[in-house]
Structures are given as structure tokens and as C-alpha cells.
Length: 611
Image (cartoon, rainbow, N blue to C red; front, top):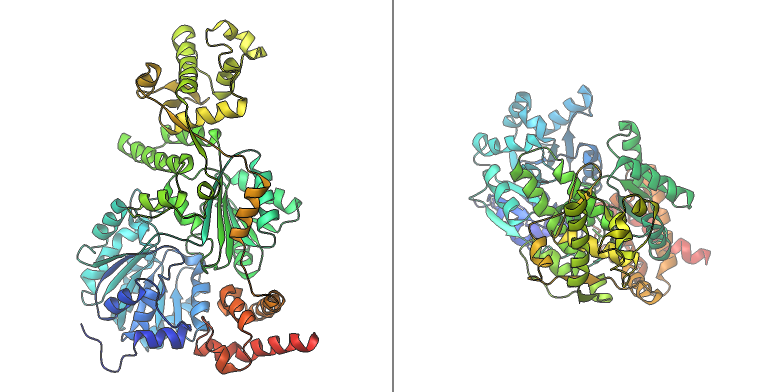
């Protein structure tokens, strides 16, 4: 379907409204296709500019762009950000009172909206469907489309009903978007949303500005504190923990160390969660400590680090969570502390999970892929891209590239561990966890070893060639490779079918030896995660941040709604002296120039006068 001759050109809208001179990657092709009335399924990484792929067609086409999003708590911020650009936007969700809803409905019917955000559950309400029938719909955008994948990490049942959109409004184009999907999830999205005939756009999943690092776990909170103090002082970031208790304890630990940190998990009072999220979005330098309940749709561009204190359940979850760092394209860090206890715990959770055998098998496959990423001796980025079916070259900006680990033949140590597990089970009818296995191998006559007469085993003391930490690494990698299983409430070890060829000497076992993290590697990593600015620009940037913070507080919106850090850095570097010059800065469209231009120029000249 061709656009009317009076429709604005997408590139003109990009420049005039959003302040950017050119589209990135596949954006131009997607925008042209959807603007012309075509259906699209878009897989694009977080920070890749997905929202422009439906916002610009909504502004180009006749009618209102209806955006289906599960992110009720963030709709106000999304609307505020668009309003700051001069885009007429509104939302309908359960947080509004009747008067607010009527005002938005009236604006929709009278053609006074460009974009309308809806939660998916509202499309199951007949009154909402009748309302949409009475207006003109430019397009349907289905954001966070992976929520329709039934075995995905963010499944939302309400998304299953969205296939009705095409049935009820067959002439309205649909665009489904997600930041993460394997080939199987991609296929499932297309089938469940009725988009098998749509044009598919799969952008590169590479986020070159993110430095991926996975560290052996050793007092993880202290490791986190070292990361924040040495590489990210004063930066905004997200710390993910597996349990609610760990979230609260970690937040308390950071606050006690002088770092502004807030907890977020589903067990907190809803009002407190909302206040903490608002502070994270609106204030600079806040660290949010959270379970994975936090983060989807968070459009805060200046998150400089994402840290995981526990092992994610899947590569998809890990990729999406780390992707919340560096949405502005500036250098950022994705850091994960990973150890033996993580593997044991995740295996146990899978064994005890609800669902049939096929479901547990899927969970195991997800975990195996995550463990492979942790244990690889190759480039982390290449491994990530391969998981999503894409190719890449070694990046030179992840821990395995910066400080390559050694690969060594761990067959004999593997046999010693497996033999110990075998003898305990076969000769004594006993099962134990890592601590007892290692004590036996090291020949430690502990009270527990004496109690069970384990010093009489033939394997007692055969592992004195390795230290306790090294043995924990061996056991961790045996579990990661499926050569050692775990069972029962006490998480004791058992052999697997794959163990026997190793015990018989029919299979070699390659292992990773983690490099020591020296001051030199820390300096290299720290440099990679910091943002370079022109000499003399840093004080100007800080003045602009202070102005932006005060303006945002006055208007009751997040600071990034005013300008992104990347825009402020360019202003601080180029030092424009007129509105015309300021208008050439990336990220400053017509509305923002008119609204904030004088304030920016006054901040620049005011600083000069003060100096």
C-alpha cells in the first residue's frame, strides 16, 4: 500500500522530531516497509533503536499507532519521553482513574494522538476493542514480542490473544519487536502472532560497546564493590541476584559502603517498588539491586554496568539483562560472578521444577548453553553471537580476549573426582557434596572424614597436586560438561551416563584454567569501560548534567527524557554558541531545541563567566 503524497518522509521525521541525521542498520528498511503497510517481525538488540521502527511509521501514516506493551509501570515515562519530542502520546492501563481514561479516549477519537500505549490485557476487554474500532489505526506495534513464547523467560498469557488483531483489523499493518530470540523462539513468535507471512528483519545481536566479563566467584559482594569503586564510581547500574533475600542483603551492603543502592523484587510493597524504580530512572548514579522481575523495557540510556551475582538460567535471559547496559552506545560493562555453587543450585532447581520431562530437558539445554558461555576459552562475544545463529570475530574487548585463559587436559583430575564419587556410592552406599569430595582428595582428616572412615578409601589423598580452589574449579567444570550430576535435598553428587567413558579412559576432558586477575588486567578492563572526552570537556559535561537534573526534577520526568548523556557529551565537546549550531547536535530535534535550547546555551556561557 503506497503512502499518500502528503505524508512526510521518514528521514525528515527522524531529523525534525528525533534530531538524528541518519537511520542505523536495518531501521530505514523496516520503517519504509511498515510505513507502506507491510507486516514485520523485528529482532534487534536492546539499544539498537527498535522503538523508532514503529514510532516513525506511526507519525508518517494516517491515524494513531497503537503500541501493545506489558510495561504498565513504564508507560508514563514512555509517554513523557515522546511528549518532550513534541509527539502526541497517551496510554490506557489499570493505573488510571476514570477521568484520565476518558480524556485519553477522547483524544484518540478526535485524532489528537499520534501514539497510544495499551497493556495486552486491555485488548481482551470488548469496550477497548469497540473504542479502537471508532478511531483510525495507523499500525499495531507489539513490543517485547518474546512474551508470547510459551517456554520463554518472560511468557505472558495475554500475548496469546494478540493474533486476533489481524482478524479484526486485516488492513492495519503489524510490527512485532523483541531484543532477544533464538531461531526457535523467533519461529514461535511468528506462528503465535500470525506473522508467518510478515517480512522478518534480524539485526546483528552484537553490542560492541559492552565489555563481557565472567569472574570466578570469591566473596562476590566484595568483588562487586571492587568493580564499582575501581571502574564505575558514581555510575548508574543494575545488580541482579537470584533470591529476594540476596537482593536486600546486597543493597544493604552497598549502602553501608557508601554506594546509593535500592532493592527491587516482587516481595516488596508495590508502592516501594514503584518509588525505587522512579528514583533509579530519575536520579543519576543509583545502583538498583534486583531479581529478574526488574528491567524489561527500562529505557534508561546511561546504565554503565550490569552485574550478576548469580548464574542466569539461560543465555537469552543473560543477553537481555546485560543489554540494559549502554543503550546510549557508550562503553559499558557486563560482569558476572560464577562458581560451583551456582551450577549445583541451578541443576537442583531444574530437577525439582514443575512440568514434564520435556520441559526439564529444555531448562537443561538453556543451562548447558549458559555454562558453555561461562567456561569457554574463546571470545565471549563470538560465543554469544553463535547462540543466536550469527557469526562474529574475536572482539578484543571481553575478558577472554583481554586476558586469554589456558586450556588444559583435565582428564586425570576428572577421573579422580569421578572415582571418589563412584567409590563412595558403590563401596559405602553414600553420597556427598563438593566439600567432602575435596577433603578426601586432599587427604584431610577432618571430623567428618574420620566419622565416615573415608581416610581408608583408596582415593584418599590422591589429589594433593591441586589446591582446594582448583578442585572446586574441576568439579564445577565436570558439572558444566554434564560429567557429574546432582540429586536430592542435600545436593549430593552422582555419576551420569557421560561419566563412564571418562573413568574408562575412553574420553579426554579439556578444562579452562582461569587467569589470575592482576592489577594490569584490571587497568585494561577499567579503561575499556570508561568514556573518553575531549580535554576540558568534562567540567562542562558535569555542568550540563546538573542543569539537566534540575530541569528534569522541575518537570517531574527522568533526566534522559531531557537529553541523553551522549548528547550532553557532544555539546560539551563542540561548545555551540547559537541555537542553529545547537540544532546540529545528534539527539536534538525541533521541539527539544525550542524547549531547552536557551537553557543549554545559558549553562554553557554561564560557566564561562563563572570561570
